[in-house]
Amino acid sequence: MLEIFDLNYSMLANEKSEEIFTLRKKIFKDRLDWAVKCTNQMEFDEYDNLNTNYILGVYKDKVICSLRFIETKYNNMFSGTFCHYFKGKVLPEGNYIEASRFFVDKLGVKKSELRHYPVSSMLFLAMINYSIKYNYQGIYAVVSHAMLAILKRSGWRIQVVEQGISEKNERIYLLFMPADNLNRLILIDRIKSECESVDFKFDDWPLLYSFLEL
Image (tube, rainbow, N blue to C red):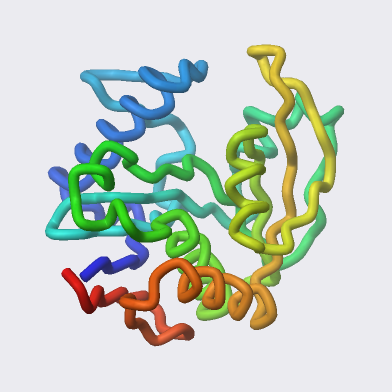
């Protein structure tokens, strides 16, 4: 069973936070070579704080995928780190959340039975279910071109609000990601089309995926 759930920063146990931040270092620093802060083989920054909620996908007690959410009324990556890449653009007022530090542990997935399943789409559905559960109007995120392509392949009807250029001189995108029943159904159909052997309640939160063949 793959369980995807949320935890506030204050509720992260030491061993789980170390696991998340270690995976983030391997992905964002070692593999992608982003300009991120690392200490003791872990990646974390000022946006990992009491205003942060994490989405965690756990399979056999190991974190397989994750991201972090911050309500846009608080300091977040777009208002801080990314703002000058988008000519000082300001997000609209409202009950929105910003998503950052998306990852799927590809090596962990490859070594497990999950290698046959669309884990990214499962994580995206969890993002929508979380947002609907807590009555958010939608999600904003800054993503790379590679992540934009993954999101588009999922079928999620994301909107590119603006384009910018990162410190690596690479194109990045400010996205609005609608969290509604239409996009939830699109992702459900996508997941079921790729694997008929997965069972889940599509509108649940937390989201539990049972695999009939595992």
